Length: 402
Image (cartoon, rainbow, N blue to C red; front, top):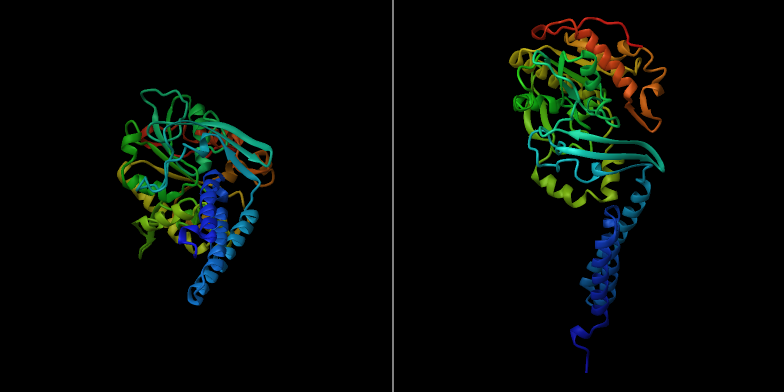
């Protein structure tokens, strides 16, 4: 008498395989999830190849076996190729960031609270810090404030935020400290941000809920890679504000870089090493495209108009031109000058920033500014604005602080 379907050896093997796979899937690290999925798919497809007898369906199972086997090999190879010497630990990796897509305006932002972070290069500790984030979701700046203090807002990315340094070591902190109570500082910089987050914050009037009183001065700190960021050419800012360049040089808000369908897709594949390899190595998400410079300038220009027209405050661009002689950086600096921006170059604050860059970075493994660089910049800016009254804060050329 023939075996019934539930007595089939192949079916039992299939059930055992899927059950064991489910247990293994729940135990593996996130980075290995897709390797396990594709390996299990290969194994299940192999069982089906042996089990299925009809030629038509046999061909289907052979195709499935080939697809899953290729995906498994590719996933494992990409997992090995994508291995980096850089790693993070602490609350920074768990509860620090507000989930992608929840913030419809800026794309992502920090949660309020105190968050620890440790960065390693292999086994070497690069830095260990705690970031304090206010209820308004900006970095805490310890400072003494007087009733007559001038409200100063800083925009930018991780350089402004102070990645890798403590709350008492950021550039906005040193600016406030050197001002000795003259300035009430608000640090709106954050990891990976660009000027598109600045413009969107201005358009949605976020400063009203953050700044206590009128804004007297706004300083945007820019770097060359902000040109990539404003165009959405990054692997972290999936839902940031997207702007398009209009005739005449103005820009228009077009929603987020990606919509809900991309979010569904990304949530499914974000732990795939193959996806990460294609995104970062093949598509070359970090490639600088000078064609995006007009968009970058348009976003900064529209921010300037919003600040000077609506907030009635002066707007300054603090730009990292340390790559003097780099034609792309020079292009940006030259266009800022041609468009009559109030421009302050880092090289005029720290003249040896290029020659002795190791003195001003966190580590050979992290090029972010260290506390020394933040101190020099903050001190220089405070001195330059120190003598002007709040209602007319203008830059007074100062000597380099070193």
